[in-house]
Amino acid sequence: MKKGLLKGFVSKALAATMLLSLLPANAVAAGEDPVVVVSLGDSYSSGEGIPAFYGQEKAWEQRVYDEDWLAHRSTKSWPGLIEIPNVSGKLNNYNVKQTNSSKCKWYFGAVSGAETKHFSKSTQRKDTYKRLSLFKTLKTTSYLPKQTDIFNKVSGDVDYVTLTIGGNDMGFVDVITTCATGSTYLHFGSGKLKLEKQIDEIWAGYSTIRSNIKSVYTDIKAKAGAQANIIVAGYPKLLDKEGKGVLISEKEATIVNQNVTKFNNSIADIVNECRNQGMNIYFVDVETEFDKDGGHQAYSDNAWINSIILTKQDQDLEQNGFVSAYSIHPNEEGAKAYARCVNAKIREIENNKTARSAMLAKAAAPEVIPDTSAVEETTAPVTEAAVNDEDVIEATEAAEQTADETLNEQTVDEAAAETE
Image (tube, rainbow, N blue to C red; front, side, top):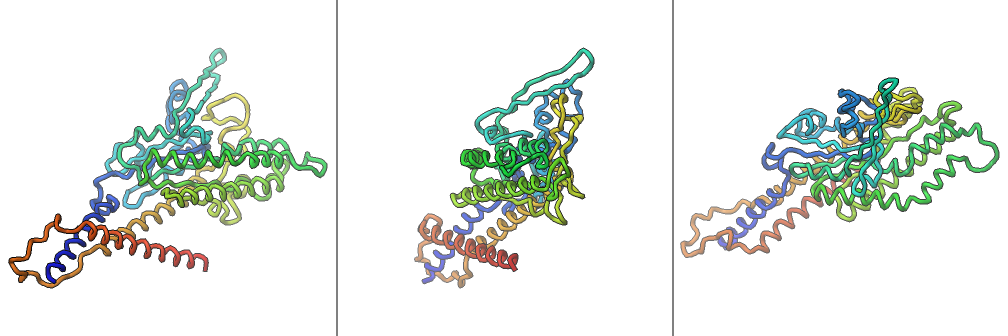
């Protein structure tokens, strides 16, 4: 009888030890391993339209060879404003190219203009053009590495990957250009607008885009590791619901915004599909935040998205022609709005980790047993080797099941509370 009690005690103690080894590093020994975050994606992640950009302090002749400047990675981008619980400050304090920290490491790899193919299949071309004087014009062509190559530089296990992707595959830039150059006020007859035809063509070929987006998520998981939390942020509606006079009609604004929402819903579906297949991935909606107080789209009274800028800006890679690349991209307030949404998701993930760890530890804790000092001397010592492996496995599985069931119940309760 007493031998059985001892055996049960050791089994549960071993199970607890095994479970503790699986807990997050900061739950076991805070500060041992740095938090590692990798930020990838397109212009909405790089911070296009929000100077200053990393590398822009260099003379033009030098900055055209600076990868960060060519990618238009902003010092005020939303990934740089991410806050990780138990890590002081924001990620832009931990850029690995600027700081060597044992607490946190941030790898910034987003590139303005990126498409899904630029993650694992193709390098990304960047052309620069500027007339330096009456007799001197500097033109360069560079190729930025595939975005998943950044994982070859990462030191340590990746905790988080953030990204936005798909907007350029959907032709957002071309759609806005059509709005600005093909207004409904110039359309006669009852046929479809040029804008509507263009969007119809995009959706007709969307199955390929969808497949490519999912491949990006899969490639990131393969490079970052199954332990990494992949956070996919959506896009905000782009235009004020009333449009902008002759430049963009109310009907055009409605068409564009409805299709942005349709695209976000599709991204969320892909993410859910990946989660159901076991991927550690989350979708973050930003539409709700940008829709607050009547909306903060381009041309609204309090816009968090740049309007169409008809002149080249100082940091545009190509200085010839018209229309800045800053156009229809989040401004500094827009970046803060993105960060609020992503930070809320990270807090949720970290809170769930903490709750699950506590439940696992509690469920695996050994029971209080009677004093065993009087056990007969003839009783064989109970050692780790003497414990049946099935006892440990059974205790571990029971602990995990209890924790998961409790967390699931909490999730249902929280969802019900939000609905109310």
